[in-house]
Structures are given as C-alpha cells and as structure tokens.
Image (cartoon, rainbow, N blue to C red; front, side, top):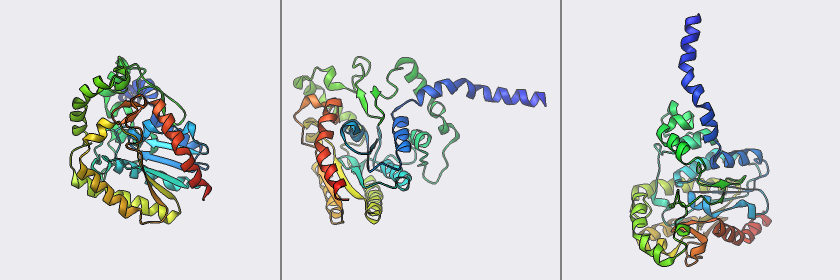
Length: 322
C-alpha cells in the first residue's frame, strides 16, 4: 500500500510543481471577462462578441449599465458563436448582442484545432473541439502549450495578456513597446505617418497569413451559417442584434479586397431584413486619426475611449426601447 501511495505521489509531483505557475498564468484577460460575466450574470444587458478588434476597441467603463465585452484575441466568428451559445441562456436580462462583422470576419475560421481553445475551455467551460473531447493537456494552460507559456512567463512576465487590464478584461495600460512593438506599433514609431506607411507592406504580408485579406469561400459558408443561426436565436428570444465593424486605420482599409467586402455586404443585407437586426460600420470613421490606433487594425486605449463613448448613445437608445 505504501509503495502504491509513493508511486501515486511521484505521478502527481509534476502537476503539483506547476500549480503556482498555473495560478499566475490564469491571471489574464480571459479570467477577468469570465469573472465579470459570472458575477453579473443576472444583471448584464449588453454583450459584445468578436476578435481582438472588439477586445481592443470596447472599454465598458465608458458605458452605463451592465455590459460585458467578450472580444477574444485571435478569435473568429465560429468562436464568437460557440461562446454566445454557451452563455446566452445564463443571462436572463440580456437585451442587446453585438457581433463583430468586420471586412475580414466571415472568411477567417479557426475550427476545432484553434490554439486558444484551451482558454475558452478553462475560463468559460466552452468545449469547441468539434466531435472530439478536449485533450487532457488542455485542462491546464501550462500543459496545453508548455514551451509557449514558459517562455512568456520567463521573458515577458508583465505581458501575460499584453498589458494591465480592468475588471472587464480591457487592456487599460499599453505595454512597453521595447519588448512588444507589434502590440503598439504606431506608438513605437512615434505616430510618424511616413514611417508607418513604410512598414505597412510587411504588416500586409503578415495579415495575409492570418487570413485577413485572402479569399476563403469555405470559411465564408461555415461562418455565415453559424452566425445566421445565432442571429435567428436572438430574434426568437427578443434580443436585439447589432453587427459591428470596428474602426481601422486607412492603410488596412485600403488593402481589403472589394470582392470580400461585397460578400460580407450580401450577408448583411439578408440579415437586415429580420426584426431588430442592425449594422454599424465604423471601419472608416476614424481611419485618418493615427493617434487613436495601436496598429493598422487595432485601437489603442485612447481610441477605445473615443469609440466606446461614441457608441454609448446608440446603446442607450436600444436599451430604452426594451
């Protein structure tokens, strides 16, 4: 019996050893969003779903009422819908749902092998692995990607989620650009428009790899099907739906293929025929205001303040009509 206990303790020892590190890693923006959602589930009236465009552009501190922003860094429509389906029945007072629908959104699909599925699993309980069960190593952040998290912890301990964040999981303080210029590229270039233009082509090639500008009709079919079902679910539940394109810098807007925009607009046109479904296109609203952006397609904290305050009257009006 003693031998069995010893072997069992030896088996557990690696897991026990990483628990302190795991606790540190779990102090991130996903955890903040999940905590706020859980603690305010009976009061939340508005929820934003989307990628890092939403995460970096919406700061609920500037909105009255109970608002949750669930923008996911590196996310996509299929992950937005998976998270929506998981939480919608847990929010009895939900009145308005925002789904990001930027020009790139419908042709970017992450699927069951997304590298951040473990974050959705651990923080929200979302098992978006297709027909497969979550792998055992995904039940901890560290074991899901040991090399990635160890390097992040050792070399960028203050950049676990790219800066300091508030109770809503919004990044309120930008990181040191000397250690991560990609996060706040425009600031690292002192908002010099000429220098920003000179680096834009490299960013364009990078975004091509992220499916921001390339054509993906298979992803379009999958995403439109998923998003339409989510919209129809909201309509049946009496929840207003706002499809939102967040602000982008003009260099990003200029690169977007017109055919991709046309396909997105075709989908939007069909959805706007439904009751209480709306579309807000802010892609070009601030496109020349370099000081509001961190890079070509993400706002900085100042930009988020300006944009969120701009949205406030619209949101208040929707809530007042319920």
